[in-house]
Image (cartoon, rainbow, N blue to C red; front, side, top):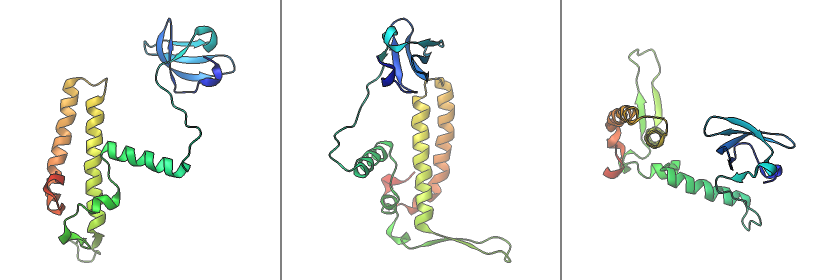
Length: 177
């Protein structure tokens, strides 16, 4: 493998040391942090380095870059379960459309705070989506023990429970907490 084809953060495989991540590059060598904990400086050509994971290159793209990026981001949003603000508002119960949340302080000398319900609803849904992503990250974390995962899941479950107060805002029951 040529030094020019390496980049920092790339995963590579060495015949003797196994797999690792490229941490630094210079003209002739690469510094690699191997999964076993060792760090070695190697000449990629002489060491017979190989890619440890699939790579991709986008060339000859017959699509405007902006459109390509938008489609990629849209696919990521769908896969992560995140929603666009306008898609979120569609899930707000019809009776709440155009409504306002008004918070009155106990001191009448202070001004009340008004927030459009669509804005408030969007923030509630984003909290839910972020909890879902956190839940996925905890479940997939390689260094947490099963006991630690269960303990953290309990916090997430209690957070969902606290958010059930806002179920009245949802149009469809399956979107509720």
